[in-house]
Length: 420
Image 1 (cartoon, helix red, strand yellow):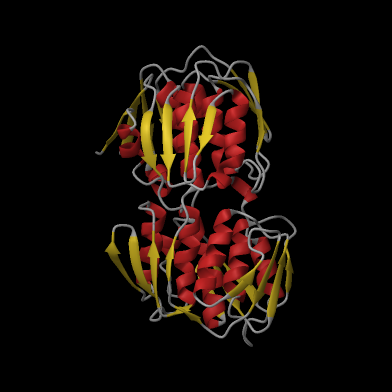
Image 2: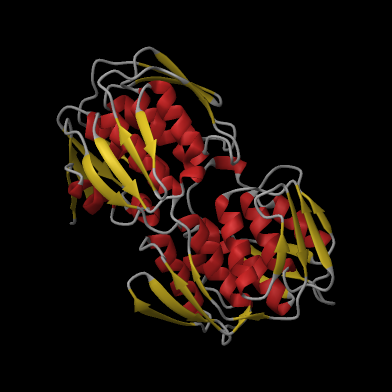
């Protein structure tokens, strides 16, 4: 079984360059299904979720060529509707973007229920279905398959989400960009990757305004054309290295970032006593020997991101005092707590709240990556622990982090991937 071995107590130091954002790359890849032409996508991260998404598109008939490092040419004109590989689709959550993309292009979609990290009952697609129905489609679920059909074509209308949903916002954008008439999405998600998707679609000829606010307006167009587009830097990858630098008491310059996207993480790191300096496209994080406890509640963007919650919890095991972490987005996100306890962490979970008290030190142990962000939290815990930490189930980590072991080694970490 492949694993990552970390030997701790070494401050990180140096410079790390952030890759393209996984959560932006995935919807943009599936959006290519809508385009009548060739799309050249730059700054595509080399992560497993992207590789599987490219395999899904290829299986459907798309031509995908890597023309340079992290740059792909994608031609989805040959794609056949309803032909996505069920087994691949079940392995990642973002495959549900095929519902919106197929519906927008063909007027119907057939996709197996998606997989990915399992956070329990908090990640349903009921809001996606509500949005599709508002656009004139009917939705059926048969076993593990979702079928959506708009016999007269997708027709623009008002869509109001009961709760903020990133996936739902993206799917309705994909479904309505070539619809007849206008679509208004209210209570839309505001995340940077929503904006990135809108910018990509607009370079292809779409007419989308308001992305980044809670009201998005879309004027349907007849067709999208090919374009060249570069994906934004990954704010969660950047935040992860910021936390790792603070946790180890190191000093790391993190390049190829958009500092505004990192404001919630920056504010919390400064709150606990770390030093964060901003440049045009970089941040420099310096840790201190003593960090202070804090209180965190995750919220939709621009609040503190749920995808940074486990990493911060690992850091807070060494913060002076007692910290409170409240999960305001997903249920069952605290499965990593039992893994931290194996390393000596004092963490108690009650419902959506964790109480983390300072311990003298963590000690190395064998732990499991129970999901993507929890997996990299175990790496951070290993970086500050005494002794060796072995992390199993690392396929989760490789789903979302581009060369995390190599990047940490170049920052001075004693870390390696062990392949069996």
